[in-house]
Image (cartoon, rainbow, N blue to C red):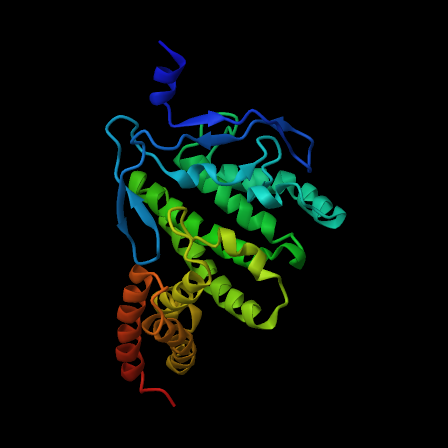
Length: 292
């Protein structure tokens, strides 16, 4: 079989350049996805801005998200590629000290994993759960907060998929936990966009939250409102606190919706979903007694 024919049957390949882990010095060649060739069959855009993909008859399950994060196969340090090697001494030490704990808890959740092998559903889920934990130990210079938000919502997607595949293993609990973490962190990201405590502009190229469309800061505003509404009971158990939380999210969403109506440059899908979400907010806030 020719090389071209062999490649046409594969989803991914190994990069020629070697990636060295700054934590444990392990060398590996990052797996990357082939482009084109009918590998991806795009489906609908979900309410949480996830692009769904149909199962491919030739290649089976294919997801570009599997290959995004750089993960050390030895110490399980995970990060977006641009951040993988940019560690301060303090960050390096903190992540290195957590290695055993990181490996232990991820294997308790997902079993033994081998990142030297081709990525799949479980290693994809692990890559984002590990990234979320590792970004907890990064300093403000690399804008870790929006990257934690993206890692959290992608982890939630993956554990939702795992729950569908293995419904009796409790993956739905991890899915909901990561959604709730994302809800909180997207709100914090909005605050940082205004305060400038982190250089969030530097994260604009990886805000996603998916890989087919980078909705950027519009996506942050929309997801903050969407997740706040979806998890209002967990975020604010008391009705009066829910009203305050929802009113604040609605005002932010109104800016996205309002700017979209006056600008032809705003992407249509997110504008339409923002309009629908804004209407849902109005109904919900009225049910809680209306804005004070």
